[in-house]
Image 1 (cartoon, rainbow, N blue to C red):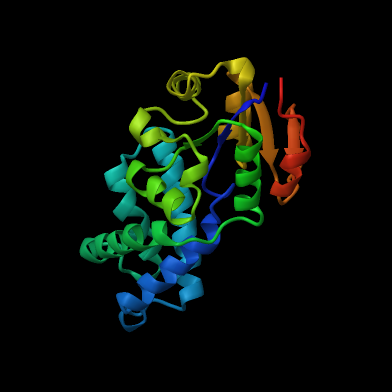
Image 2: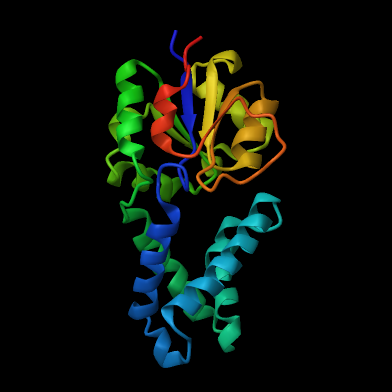
Length: 234
């Protein structure tokens, strides 16, 4: 019997870094940040990525709400140039980003090939992501992955985030699956892999940078195409 496969989206299938940076550069130009004294596009992106990582950490820990995160990360990114108090600018950058980045279609190498092949083999494929409801569905659809996924489950809609055990149970319930038949595939050791392991699921850790760790992981790959060689049956 084929295992049910639950995929993470950002950084696993959807090339978050490439898509995000493209959208950020467009936002920089659209709102003419250079005329406001903001440094180069590269300097701006560096400050944004640092601020975004901090804000997402706060969001995951429940210390920041989604609505605050969207503008706050941009305000923090502008702090280096003394523009952090320009809330209107932060909000405008946040709106532009949310309106453009989900429509970007760069995928991680071999993502579509792997997803299509697993679908054709008979696996039930489900997207299980910590992203926002309204943007994750757009990404999946725009990148041509919708036909292969039974559903797109977001932490935003489910009200609980990976690695919390609750989201893994909800995913099973909504997909008519079971822990012994579920496998989580993702790039986050903590959110995807340890979370799934603690929930009794199988795990495939996508670790393209071959980051060293001491966790027990069922399967580990450094490229997506290697997933096709794994024993994903029960």
